[in-house]
Length: 120
Image (spheres, rainbow, N blue to C red):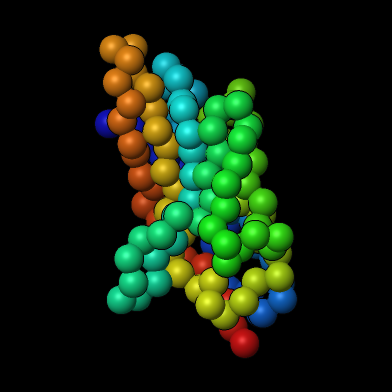
């Protein structure tokens, strides 16, 4: 079982910034894409941002221009820099890593989630 360790959530006022981090174990064979998803109460879990191993990114329309995803492949860590936060960004944010096993099977793993609350 692979454990993803998330950090960086919290309470911030509208217009503020937060940076989320998610680290996978160093002994992972290979990680394909990594990403951030969020889920507000009563809603489904939606993609916020995703980055593949080569660094190509895609974002939800609602966060384009405000959020930036990046990764450090040497540390098996993905980051989400969130600027100009809005109350509607309030949610539990989950990290996802698509891990490639030595058998060439891709298995998705999720972090435990970190709460982001933006006050108006």
